[in-house]
Image 1 (tube, helix red, strand yellow):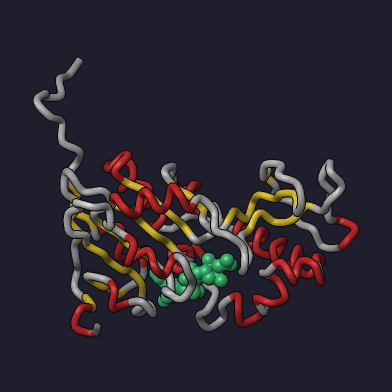
Image 2 (cartoon, protein in one colour):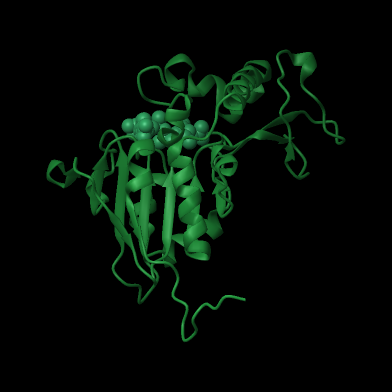
Length: 261
Ligand code: OAD
């Protein structure tokens, strides 16, 4: 793998007929000041998944769970998108419907940078939902510190964070699978390649029968656990690499020239 790692200024070419699938992880928000999960000082060092991020934890101690997500709401509400988020929003602007962003992150930094064609496969930090009925998730920026603070749904059950916990099904899977199958370029940014199913997306990409050869890239300061699956690895911080990483051919305008009004 070492031989594939780039230190020079690289380029990913996005041609007229390419479709780009981008997968982001906690690393894309690191330069905004949000902690990743597994690095030194990562969220899973100070908190155990079993205590705050699984259905059993919610049953056992909902106050501790809400304290964890309230703390994360507070932190995420205080930071801004960084050049990596902005570069991906700019890329979407150029590629239009040939661009699709799937984030594992629950913060809203991609949206705040201008991204629109995106899904949050692990849920959204600034949304809550009923633990029991199928009422829609709703926008919620409140911080809940004690059991008495936790609101109740109209059905009487408790309101929980709209986060996908370990052991729960990821969101938007049919749409993600469709976009993965038909993409021709996959770019993963700032994710350790340890959590499924996201770690397998690099294998699912471009599997539509008759697809052209898929190119797959990773951007981050260190190689992910699934590094051997990528065509190329670009070592560096996302906020430094992404703004100068792409050579884009805009969508072809067939048969007609743009005219001034
Ligand atoms: P991790 O904390 O596992 O990995 C973060 C990755 O970001 C690491 O590989 C770092 O090298 C990289 N990184 C750090 N700084 C970076 C920078 N400036 N630019 C680019 N990359 C950088 O986080 P994820 O892979 O996102 O799930 O974790 C996946 C899931 O596991 C999370 O969504 C969360 C967690 O448990 C749930 O909570 C359900």
